[in-house]
Image 1: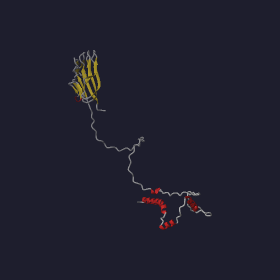
Image 2: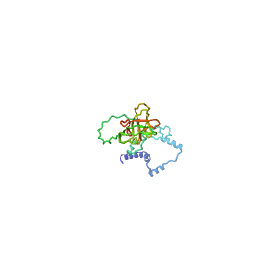
Image 3: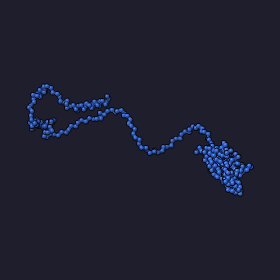
Image 4: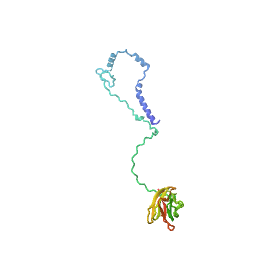
Length: 279
């Protein structure tokens, strides 16, 4: 049992001694003592005679000193006051057992409030140079451009006319169709277009740059005694399969553009400025 059992046994013996001491002090009487006690018994006395007899028995006679140890009743006159004998105290610390096993872990408590951000730490040491990465993809460039001209003059009619060009200066990837006179967008993005014509004296010049059947900008010159060069330019955002071309206005008024077979007076050009997928 160890030291714990020894301490428990000692404490139990002390408690048993205090509890059973008065009882054990009364030794049992034998048969002879009981007979002698019965033969010496006196007839019972009433209450007053018993008190007087006890008073004479326990009171000191004249000329005699009181015994050092004497019993008193609480009801007798002149009963001295004795201090109470303190009850022995048991040191409970000797009953302390050994430390028990550790209990199970309890449930996790609630999370506390988020604390304030701490101060920024010191800059760490510079790391080692990393290894070279794999080569990237080849840069993809997108291009689209054309420049065409016309050497024949054109007069207005009762209907709108698409200006057809007969001279090809640049036609990258064939995006400008020389038979229909239209530029077809295969690379979406922002384009720049410019149109140059030579006016006819004593006639108006009235054309439109078209996008998907809609008039975008006009090129106009009033009637004049002299023929001059006239131009128009713009930028358009095109999507895939958009169409751009030049249209001559119909014959409500006399309208014409000048050119000859020796020189090119009429030109129409365009090129991609920025691809739609570029940031």
